[in-house]
Image (tube, rainbow, N blue to C red):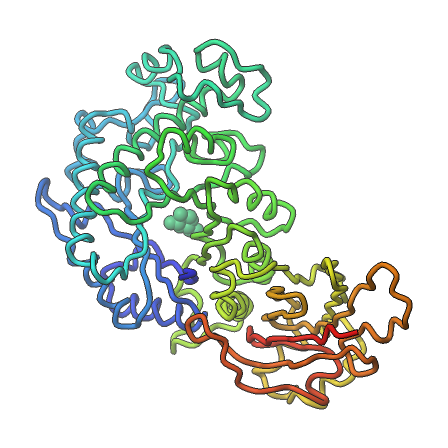
Length: 513
Ligand code: DGJ
């Protein structure tokens, strides 16, 4: 399946009314996935006594609504902090020490090197995996588990405790020595952290410490129950990109991904939490996390706003795309449980992706993102055999034809004329396409082959040439099967192929010449 959905707010687990509302928001986004935390402090209020009733409640609520779940293990580290640890951990700093900053003072992050801390979190996480194996091993409502949340050290680039410094003075583990970090300022040589990683030595060391801790949990968890394990990332593409200042140091930011891949092979996907708005930075992040050894899953992004609504098309068109979620499900709905107007844009984009999910999941064709950037009235896609011209009615004076077949007064149709256009075009055959989205109309022209000597008019998909469509079908997928709901023809097909409301059309062009 292609997981698409929303994440709960941090403190929603355990609140039945709230959880139901959040799951309802997932459905209103056209999603099939809910992400929600499991809190260590709730699971193990007293040391050694475990209670997974809240996780069970989550699983049952999701089963009831026929959606899937990704559980987020809030253990020793939630965004750098130990706030989700049980009180018996928080209240015993001798047994569970904090890491130290360069001035020797403590920072608000538990050290992942401390033996008792490692053992305690490992025990609780392993119990969680046992619980999932026993309660969900046959139904698989839970698709994956995220280990901790945006891990790393807050306010320091590494742990400067004596124990950590002793470790730092030891040789870099041999399996890391062939990694060369971008912009390290050195040519790697030798076996010290500085000689291997130059100006990024502290961050590389911190990353290894955290990755080693994560692998402890992941390895044990996988031994108990073999489901995908994820790590989410507080991105390094922030401000002036200095660890411990602009983001938690030692987390799996793109700079140190290779260290994580080698140290924590039990983690299946390292996932960027992308809250950035500008397209350039967004694309940069996609390019860093979409790798042959890392599928692209975005576990957190804004639940509303035009930027994410547009950017998520770019993620969905990535060849390694395998899922997307937005953070703060309950924030998308008003008090009556209706979708807020400001959430509509992102919901429409998620519906767009969901409309074509079976094709995206199987990578059943070449996928192209259509995104109306600022000032754009058209977007041109250069396909091997076709010119594709996407027109955005919201920016175009000529809306000829559209009003004749769409009731533009119906609010449900307004997105065709008023929202920023976006969509996905998937070429599944030489002349077969699927298009989903909103606020966009698409025209095709076949590219002339070498030696073609007839009129260009004959290469168009529209009615004024001999090349025309075979069929234009509105429809939807049932499982992997396309089901046609309506055949478009005449006015509905001859002017331009439009899409709205996130719905899909199948276009079969006539390639005969
Ligand atoms: C990122 C974190 O991973 C989430 O748990 C949540 O705190 C959001 N930030 C809030 O913006």
